[in-house]
Image 1 (cartoon, one colour):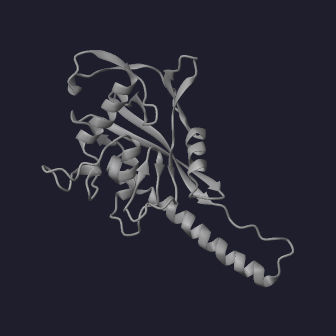
Image 2: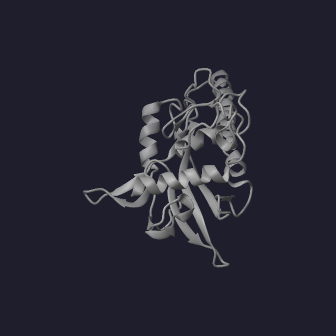
Image 3: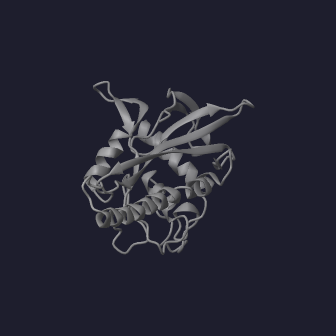
Length: 241
């Protein structure tokens, strides 16, 4: 798992309505925020987060299993493998909805490049719908930030966990970094929408001025907007002051 060298950088926040220059660090529970210099000398904002896809462990075939039992367990394992692969394939939409399939990533409201870097990690577990297991893994795969606690320990940026917990009839659901099973009837982008919640974005629909919302957090998700990108970075910086 690749982890960047993280160190304090400085960014003028005039575009956020602030007139001071403050350290750029990271967001606990949100996403790791830093900057990188590209080959042409330009600076790109980066928001990084580990995303853990829970895989159901295959069923063990006993050494003394007869042919009928072997066939039965083999069929069940094939279904498990297909479900695991389907869950892994679902994260491919992140590139479209967060980075727009562009090597330069998304844009903020100033037109600057912002790359969302999601490190996809597969973890085999006994129960892909166990909340307690998900919480443990969220901490296990956390990224270290540039912040420290009063005890001198690194403040960690918890990983998002893709589970099969039922959303109870909703198209999708997220509680903190725990992302529930997205409905098969949900529109494309719903999983990205729920990951948006793990980055502390709020729904943009249901208001009188915008019934269906816009961008990633609308009722019908679209690629992330520059304004939504601004919100994520602003939440990072405000939390770190």
